[in-house]
Structures are given as C-alpha cells and as structure tokens.
Image (cartoon, rainbow, N blue to C red):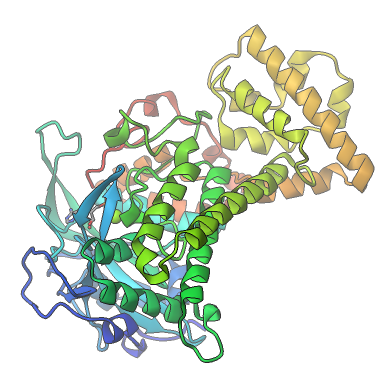
Length: 538
Ligand code: AMP
Ligand code: MG
C-alpha cells in the first residue's frame, strides 16, 4: 500500500493539537515551563545529498518508493522544505543522567515534523535528528555528524529486523555542511561532514517528559501528557466511558514496566549494549531509542560497555542493563506518583518488571540453547557456559550459531579436540588446555541435556537448529562493520551503507553470498575508535 507521493501524506498532529505549546516562537536556548514543546524550524542546509533510505520505513507511512530518490525527498528530510500539514517542534523533557537528576534536557537536536496518519489508521511521527538548534540545545549546536548518523540509521533498521522494539529510520542525508566535533574530548576538534537522520516512531515520548513535570511540580501538565499518552498509545487501557482513573494510571505504568522488560530481554538475547541508558533515553513505549555509543558483545564479556564516557563506573555495561532499566522505571514511578498517590501499586508494577524480565530471559535462553524450556536444573548449565566463555575470549554471536550445528553423535566421541572443533571459529585466541577441557565438558553436558529433549518431545536436530537460528542472529551490526561503512561514506561511497542495510534485513537467515560478514571483529578493530570504543561525541 505504499503508493503516496510526499505531497499526498496526510498529517494529524495530535501531540501539537492537544498539548500546551511554549508561547515563545523565537529560537533561543531557554528553560521552558508549562509547555510540552516549542515550535521550531529546521535549519536550512547548503547541499543536501541522500546517502540511503529504508523502504520498510517508507511502508509505515504509505510512501511510494519512487519518492525516496527524488530531490524533493532529500530537501524535506534534510530540513530544507516542510510539507503542508507539518508543524515542526521540539519537545521538553528532563532526565537522570548517569544516576543524577540533570534538569531540563529536551530535543536539543531533534525536530518533530508531524504525525503521518496512514491508511491503516496508525500515526507515525517523523523526526529529524541533527537539523539544527532548538530552545533545548543548551550549549551544543543541534547538529549531528555522518559517523553517528550512519550508526543510528543502520542500527534502527537492524534492530527492527532482529525483532527488537525500536524507533525506525527512514532516511540518512548528508547536509553539505561541516560540523566541528572533539571526538576524543582531548581538545582536538575536527571538522566532520554533517548529516540528518529522519527517525520514525509512534511516539518519541520518554520517561523524561514526565520527570520534568513533576520535578517542577507541574502536576497539571504531568496529567495532560500522561492522559494524552494513554489515549493515543495505550487506548486499550481505557474503560467503556473512556475516562482515566487512578487505576488506569496503575495499569499504564504496569504496561510500561512489562514493555521495558521485553525490550531489555531482547537486548540481552542479541548482545546489544545501549551505552547511555539515561532516563531521557527511555521510551514510554518500550522502544530502543537514541542510538549513540552503543555496541554489540563480540567476545562475551558481561562487564563490557562501548561508551568511553562511562568507562569508569561502567553503569551501563551489558550485564547491568536489566537492573538499570528497573532503576529508570523507579524514577518514572516517582514522577507519576502524584497521579496515583500510593506507593504500593508502583512497587507491584516494578515487581512485574522483575518477573516479566526473568520469565522472558528464561524463554530466550531456552531458545538460544535449543531447549524446549529452561528447567530449574538448567540454570546451572547456563551459568557454567558464561563462566566457560570467560576462559578464552569467545564471540557470542558466532558461538550460538555454531552450537546449533552440533548434535548427539559428538557425545560418543571422547576426544575434547574433536568436540570443540565445531565451535572453534568463535574463539579470539587459541584456548588453553584447561579452557578447551572446560568447553568440552560443558558441550557434553549440553548435548546430554539436548538428548533428553529429543527423547521426551521427539524433536529432531533440524527442528532444534531451526529454533536456535530464529533466536540467535547470524549477522549483527558489529561496530567495525558500521565503521567500515562510515569510512567509505566519508569518501563519498555509500554502497557499504546500502549493503549493510540489505544484509541486516534478514539477520537470522543464512546468506551464503554474505558469509564474509559472519566474522569476528578483526584485530585492527580491537582498539580503533568507533570499533571498540565510542564517546558520546556525535
Ligand atoms: P544524548 O546523551 O545524546 O541522549 O543527549 C542528551 C541531551 O543532550 C539531549 O537533550 C540531546 O538533545 C542533547 N544533545 C546531544 N547532542 C546535542 C547537540 N549536538 N546539540 C544539541 N543538543 C544535543
Ligand atoms: Mg537522548
């Protein structure tokens, strides 16, 4: 049903229509009280050029694919032209950053264009990231550079195809402007190519949109934004009279908790580390949002974070993500407390988060290992695997794909060497004798456990393998892959960006022509900026 031209898109801007606007329309940095957003125009750019557009995101708004390559498309999605019906604005929100309340943050470099209503009656907000300063830009420039925009564009779509809830990306456009960035925060700023990504989501509302209201004790605005969010994005919670009661808020918070649990379980399953889980980067819809210094576990290391800005405390390391999400939810709970006026239901909702997360984690681990279910006794098997991983650096993604190939005949082979042969490609270094023996022991235990399932459920190897390969991606957006695409795009060659988008459309499928992407991070990438370490500079 993607048949519309840009001019035919129909906008229904509920957020702007129903929530209070900042009365000031001049674009200067300020504190904005009593309003959910400020009107602001994108900044004009000199020479916009399309790098890549995603057809699947065009489908969301019924946009005909032929539009994606038009000059007008590039003008609109660089911020140079607005379509009839667009009402560009930036939202006010606050947030807890690295555990501390940071006050007003807001869309400092994001500008919402409006809500497209599609033929299915869905609303999709279009948002430019990097289209110039807004009242919320504080001391920064409102711009984004090519490297971080390639990363955001590709990862948004990659996560979607992995089945992880996420904001989407329609387009990536070079602006033709230069942007100054101190990538290493070492006092050596460089000029980099500027870029704009158009993000797409049913809503970009964050925990921080609610936190800022209660921090300012503006309960009226808090209620307005909460009611709007429930009516637009959680309409199934409304009763027959469509009024919103204390109970509705409780159910809403519970649903935010369970959606967040599901999102985090997905991250853990695919080895995604967000890197900056501040509450302003937590979506009220449970979507992955704000792709900055994120990364993918390569060698399995529970304490890894790609974010150099967080290298000291490692607050946002892989293994901590479920706990941090709970902490963030507790901040949201505090913020909406005035609507509920009781602690107990909020506590219960947080318990539901814990429960939902651990249930989903068990289901995911069962699928990752190809078991029908994780029983009490299997928890030890899983813990042992994680310990074995740490003996020799082991690529998580590659390991699980290879594990699916192994089957019972190996059990009768006593030789450790033969046993671990099938997973050796996942090792970053030659395992020590002790490490190889530990892996062989684990594989024997594992295959014995698999045998039980075969007997009880009559399952075949092919069935088990298919289930594992639906849960364990073959291809993820490893940082070094993104970096290679960035390096080439910086030279004006956009093929690799397009190629990666194509590859990551089917991350669970065997793609024999793309086997070379099923590779460990090369040694050169271990210490290269952008590949193993990323700062927040973007
Ligand atoms: P982040 O850590 O990227 O989620 O950003 C935190 C806050 O800083 C948000 O309010 C962003 O809008 C804002 N911000 C980040 N980079 C820029 C920039 N280059 N210009 C203006 N605001 C920015
Ligand atoms: Mg952010």
